[in-house]
Length: 454
Length: 147
View 1 (cartoon, helix red, strand yellow):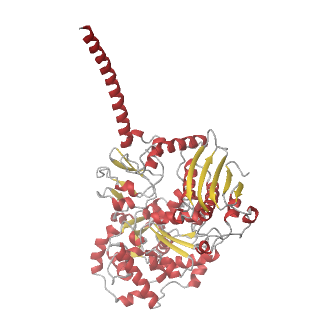
View 2 (spheres, helix red, strand yellow):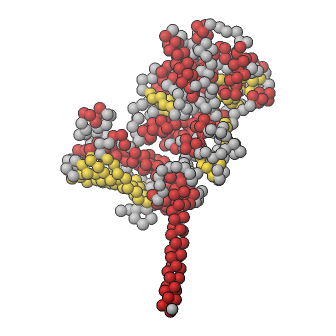
């Protein structure tokens, strides 16, 4: 139906899909339709949030992440795990054990992304101090949030922070360091992000900012969980207390919603998670209600990255684990982060700067011609008013409003609505009846005449 | 009215003092303008102005009818309320002037920026009011260049 050029990290396996429409109803951007009993994704509306993956009872919606075998394509491989990976295992397992476990799995090295996250936290602070543009500044680490802005809130594009995300900075630095260390070309160094969600894969294949990514692939936490658990069995354990000493408090907070604002002690920030909640906050920003807020930390997944659709642990448990680490680090005043003076120097050298900006990707209007668009809008309103407005979805569109739009765009027939079909049927039935009574009447008359004759 | 004939007209109702529904109509207006394909910069101004007007209704009026009227050359939004009206329009147009109660201020409203903000964002603003009866705001945004 739609042949746009947007790459998506979500695919529907047609043979598994049995058209139960759960995905269609849960999609926050109304990007799913069910046609001929199978779900399809409207590419230009999809923001890759992964809600459909989580809800599908058949497991028919699958994320596109990289298989483990991709590693063999590179001469030197480095794992760059999301801080959310730390939250997947029991209380005693900290980054030290996990990074070593990843090395046992076959990566040549594992990079401590938490430290880079901490550096970017400092950079966010510097950025907010210098910021003169529109407020609030919106955080960009969640690619779904950036895509939501591109598609549904293009007027908020200038609110997006123009700092690079930690995983990309880490990929860039790893490639630089390792290629120098081993005398290899940068493209021989494979950088693999261990991801809690499919959308990070998308941000690697098709960055919103249209540059190139310094990451070569993304491996799902759920794929690596089992092997990593076994690999960690043979890793030498350190005491909890000792392992804590190396954790940058500003970085570990990136795994949970509110973690950045809390560890930076921002006075005027909001932390929000879940697409429907983000939509409420973005509506308020557009109406000019939140001009007094400096910073918005927004994650599409509930609870932040720990709630990603490719994670394994219950997100409340994993949120709590991160929270307890943060509290402990606060209590013990452990600050294993980079020196702020060093970060300021890097900041001044544009080490953190984003070279390109995300561009608006607004949904296509009803028609590119204004007069035609107005005409279609009138038709759409008219159709909508004639519908039952119960959003049953039986037509294959998620709401009566989207159905009216689909009809106007000629992507659906009005009789796809079962209520309309019933009306249509009744009308046909009535006119058939009328025709029948008409003929009955003439028959009666004929009979009477016959009677009179006798 | 500008949008007779080929235009698009839609009516909304706003209930006064209903803070939990405040902002819904301006969000709907914004969505319609987006679907029709109006330039984002104009949508943004229209969204802010209609939000401010809607909030004024919620705070000061009993009830209002909002009419969105879109033609090939302009967006026109009329906010016609039944309510206390404005005693001195000139004064109300001044930044910082407000008759908001302490309760409204506690909720973060009543900074006296509403009407001036509508004027700043609109290309044309007409206000008429009869105290004790109600106020009508007529806000216009031109689609082809300013004014």
